Length: 136
Image (cartoon, one colour):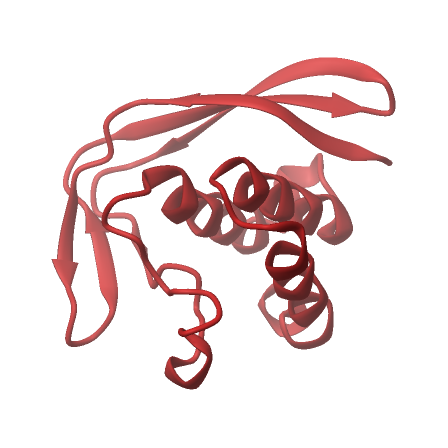
């Protein structure tokens, strides 16, 4: 399946941030709607995250955060790329998306958030190598 992010819209995401532990906890139910191009057909998907949902941002090791930050307080779409990816991986793509599709969605959200192609593709490549154990 070929998946490409066409556009996105989202509710206000209010996070309780524990910078020391790099854990972000959602303080209220929130959602993001993605308009995806799947094999040439456009379709909307709504991802809902419940109050109490926890994530660690983009899971970037500190040594590489100069290249790709773990979290960006000024760019919620960037952060949501990691949130949606965590949701997809934690639920095996909800039986809809493959691991490769989930990584493509992540890469597309990074690009839409302003990250250049090289950095977004590098993050996708690293996921392909190291994130397989998180696909459950």
